[in-house]
Image (cartoon, rainbow, N blue to C red):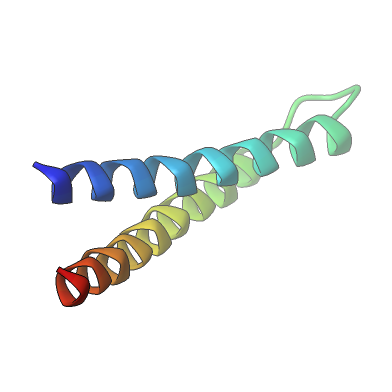
Length: 69
């Protein structure tokens, strides 16, 4: 149960930070026009990569806790 919460929390944190940065960048870049389709593809890729990074970080946390306990 604890391991699941660590994975879920870390992945959601990584996704939230990436989404927040992408949203801020989009609002600055596209103030008076709508984003192109390429923008949505790039943001999707960024979110997938950030989820992978969150998974990697969560794995390191779980392993570190396993060694400590």
